[in-house]
Length: 304
Length: 251
Image 1 (cartoon, chains in turn red, blue):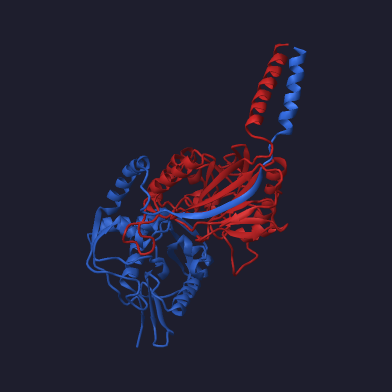
Image 2: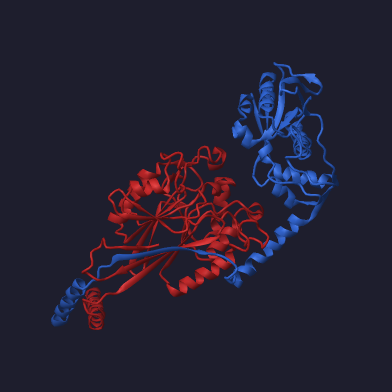
């Protein structure tokens, strides 16, 4: 009896909130929600900014500056996710001295929400990556690396979902083929699975089973391979899948001045973005959701 | 009680019918440059500082002195910097290999492209080693038959480049044809096993040095080339490097 009364009271009070809401906003008015996705890739242990004398990237980059920028954006819109597309490791002596500890600790301080695994993240072996995991307060996601027979088993999830302001966001990770890129001794029994097939699977799960409003692929496949169109890349992936809204890429250190708009397998737009390397840029994609019922779902405007 | 329950149901239905459906209507994408117009977050700065100081102190402590500036383009078939690298590998890796196997390293071969920076005149530090060898490659030793060593000579003859070598002497004529190839002053014996040190990248097929894979044995010394160079810098006071006649062409 007691429990039943509690349920009734709960129903009554939520109804009250609902009715209260009705008087404030009528059915016809439009309310808008905004989700901001921030991303980096191939930072390669670049913690300090490039010095003033650097030939190519003078005075650019730096984790402390990125932290300030992310903080400002999060203040503007708390419904923000910060993601990294892999190759966090290798590139400055910080990695050689501390094995990635500093990179992970700083990313945790910046409140990264998830990262995928790049080929260089195996540079100290799969054991070296595993050893640094306690320093990462964010999750690693990879759907096409099967880690069952490695130390990373159960430590890497295929995907992760987030709810921000009632909008459900699904993010899955993809990694590049390791054979020929990383010596087997480093990646050990990691099994690489076909990223296109996995992506088709993942997008279906996230859209149909998890009912995500936004599906994001965090990829370390590379932007595209002009001399080898067969090789899985972000562009081939975009064309061969559906229900993915955004592919955040890495590996090829491609500096896209703006996101690429590609048509997916059912003719809908997919955004593909990559911000070069070394933390020189932060990618920012804002998704606006309107409550207006009169507007059709496929009337999405893309401004890049 | 009943009334209240009924009212709750009505309200609940109303609420459900009013559940707002959100559609993706607009996407805006751009990139933001991280540059000196942004002020660094002080907490992050403070956190990095001790790590940076430790790394810099360690990297910048002086280990040796270079009497000149050396580059990999200083010579045609052998260079001062290349000879230094190959000789350093032979000197530093030999005791480890000898200790493990009882054998000596006969020959060292690295690659010209693997010398990633110049060696500047003046103070030599750990940072110098990071510049010359930023990669994580380690020393491996393989036992090659004389026939495979001859393939290695053939590779060097065809590439016409100053790949760092040590322990082997090669003379070409003016048409780059092989005149003589010797190890410890003796002609290469097809049936003899020579222990050749290189790095794991080249052993695994880098720069198409396929002859390494013909070896009948592989020893991984777990000694990074960079660390080997740092240890070598610590061992010597002065780097006075020279090209010599280990790989030459007669005119």
